[in-house]
Amino acid sequence: QSVLTQPPSVSAAPGQKVTISCSGSSSNIGNNYVSWYQQLPGTAPKLLIYDNNKRPSGIPDRFSGSKSGTSATLGITGLQTGDEADYYCGTWDSSLSARADVFGTGTKVTVL
Amino acid sequence: QVQLQESGPGLVKPSETLSLTCAVSGYSISSGYYWGWIRQPPGKGLEWIGSIYHSGSTYYNPSLKSRVTISVDTSKNQFSLKLSSVTAADTAVYYCARHERDCSGGSCHHWFDPWGQGTLVTVSS
Image 1 (cartoon, one colour):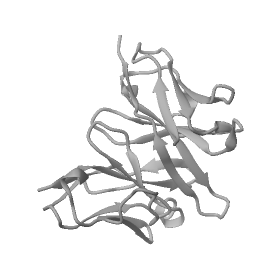
Image 2 (tube, chains in turn orange, blue):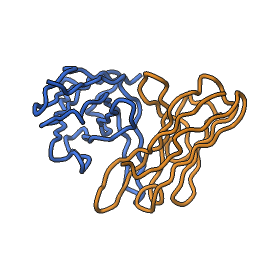
Image 3 (spheres, one colour):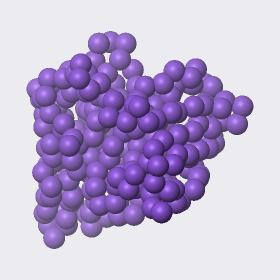
């Protein structure tokens, strides 16, 4: 059972925008930085966003990240069919009971 | 360009030990970073297993700690995972990844990049 909660799925038409939420607590998102990953079907996850809102080299600016309090959000604008994938958030959980790197439950993006 | 490649048996019997190796190319493990293992059961989400620093210090997911050992061989530029007493619940795609982790400022910066292609390990008799 992940400590980071994401909606199971989101969808939109090509060219539109989607947002994916990642809800946590003060022991994880509230006090640490968030990363986001894209997992295309049958492939390994790929880093999209790190340090809440920074994009690695080669990631288009259609992808953006933000954080507020104990939640983080990934935004994808100008949606393309190639964006159909599973998306995961990740962070460090510093709670005394379970100090661990944690991932969100995952969100499937469908392009209508 | 940093590349990682997992290798190891694709089938392990229940109660035995799962052993995987991750070969790193394009970067010397001795130069820094943590190096981690993450797994994904079929149709499910990601679970961090543990990570090792280039110096050999390790930290593990508390839920798996009693069964996990991660080691590093800098001479071969690779690191390894051993998971003991496996059951069907350990059936998953196992990924290795370079792990950026810095908690020096109080808040932890953390991400995994790049990832290996993954290897499916099935636990079955």
